Image (cartoon, rainbow, N blue to C red):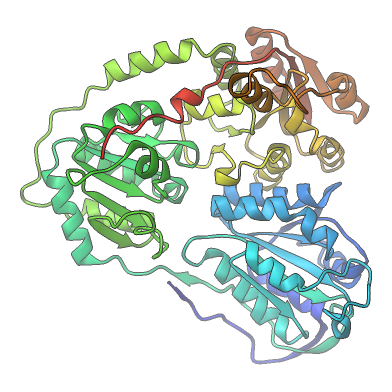
Length: 550
């Protein structure tokens, strides 16, 4: 992948570093920034004030939530989003969101303050000083750099946007000394944003992949988060090949759950043992390669924009390093002459098996049906690290790309509500539903204040069993009921939400839940639905499935 040339004016302007950075953000189409102010960024926020006619700052009550809001905005739009926090504790508070963005391949950009430039890394004990903050940031981001002057700002902002989108998208960070933000200098501003050019699709690799898929009698496609922008092409290719499309978590919605070829993880496991070719698009393929197993009779074709990914675990039969949409479109244009004519795939027996198996997963299955019925077709669902969230990854139908968000391999407890606020702030036209357990919700429960202050009408559903439910389940099943640090003391969640001025409801059954969520969406205000519940059965036997090949 290459960068397109950045368009800059020929005429220098005299402005502060903060003004130069803000101008560069505007050139890249940024209209909202998330996070918190603080003394290290005073001049930066003054520049935001001057740009308030074209730039909105959505301030949270905690840096973690501010960064998670940027994550949510990036996930729903597919475009880089910006957050700003102070150095030291501010950056470390945002760390969970940065790690989650890394796991979810989400392009977020942090503007982080620093102590006075001449004092950086000298250990004098300045407010919020942390040793080698830039080095720390480089461990959890794709790219991190320091803005040393006003003249540097446009170039580094452009580079940050390019790095956030280059190859596998991810988080980047720019830091700036508190005395540098307000320092003036000659600046050549950006006139247009930096662009990114995808690597060309390898024609030879495409032909070899098409030949393998054409000969296969039982091909399957596996999609991940990197395939979210290739829905139409993947659906068309699946139909051309009569290939079931396996999706889990980040891949959900690439092919609508209503499509006859769309299957989820448990059904995918049943199909895997008889598959004779696999096309993996924008996925690490971790579960399939490490749990389900592979063998010489199963050629695997990998499409991934990260050149290091295809052979990370096993060398595939063919690797196409390219954008998922462009590579899939190339495969559609390259059907081999010997393409096998296949009868329509009949998945009815597999679907019946799954329906019966999910019917035992109560009360999760009933709750999830209620939530799906209540969430409008174009609505966004944000899951959580909770028993209902785990079940949603198997039993919640997803009909379109970028409408179901699950936190990737970091699985950060408490990520959901702040992320959902960012989704809604970036796309106020979409209904947004966030589920959580009582343990996870209290990580960011104070952000109800943020929702009310900025009128961000997320509907939050809190399933409350007065425990860290997954911890308790593991201690019961694996440690003979030796329970420790599992039980919780909670507020009255309805009264708690009402104290912020939010709409609040209580539901004790699935029908009551469906009605409450519908009422909450109809009201169009920030809302919380409290669902008192007991312990729930584990869905993990449908996630951690046994090896069946190799």
